[in-house]
Image (cartoon, one colour):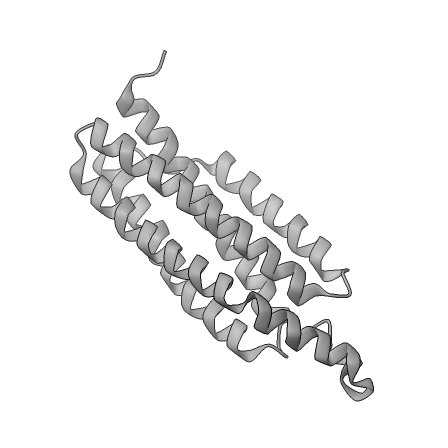
Amino acid sequence: MANVQETLIDYLRDAYAMEQQAISIMDRQIERLENYPEMTARLRSHRAETERQAERIETALQRLGTDTSSLKTGMAKLSSNLQAMMNTFAGDEAVKDVISNYTFEHYEIVNYKILKATAETAGEMEIARLAEESLREEEQMASWVEQNIGVITKDFLSRIENPHMQQTAKR
């Protein structure tokens, strides 16, 4: 059975792959959501945060004398591209993206809570602090998504109600 230090390394590698997946998801959304400028702006801002989160994780792994997992990262990116492709074919792509984002932010939140608890148990207080910092950013993004579900949905619905806006409802 793995010890706490090995488990911490596994969780850090999982978190790194998760953040790479998040970057891929946001890149696809930013490319396609041109008619939702507020959502696009928030995604761009969170993408920059996500890059810093990945850097924090890399720093933590280096501190423990190891690095990221290419296999986990590759699988996460593949998964995100498949998800983005599925949403692209939806007539209500922006709404589907909100659902995906809400779900993914909460997935990240629980992962950072687990990572923080594991780092504390391993006596790695600096890694716990880094996990807490990323956790707060994810909670802020989740809050933004939650506060904007209705706005984005109504924006989409107004586009399908107005004939001249129908071609832009998806994007």
